[in-house]
Image 1 (cartoon, rainbow, N blue to C red):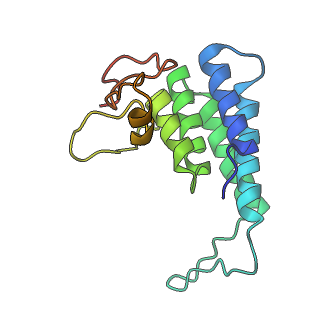
Image 2 (image 1 turned 180 degrees about the horizontal axis):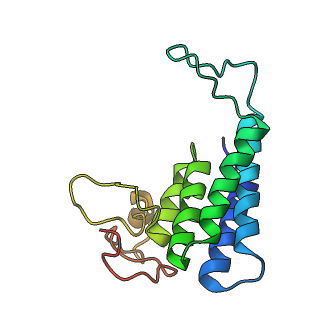
Length: 164
């Protein structure tokens, strides 16, 4: 069982909202906090697992030096980026931090169309904008009509086909 939203994801959402909706706070601070929280969560799983690659003998340990270097690189890129590039950086970091929680990654992509490196479909089918109602609901309730997966949800303000 995974939590619905982690504190890191909240920070990524706050950064996204600050950037796209002009909400209070600082997108850069939210982004940095989200990255730090995500990395600390991952690092907390260390139970004596070897971080040395047996093929190359390279050590992949999450040291403070490695974490600070990564955060510095991301924040330098963020601070010099355009608004669209900043949204892409926030989305990439949120996507990576969502490993194991595909629902949040899916919603991020559905909401923003980012990160740009995601290629969810091979068969060129339309991107699903909503989930269908469970069959039992439509069977039991004659007031519910099943809708196609391309029906936009009430909060989806993106144009049709924006990520198809």
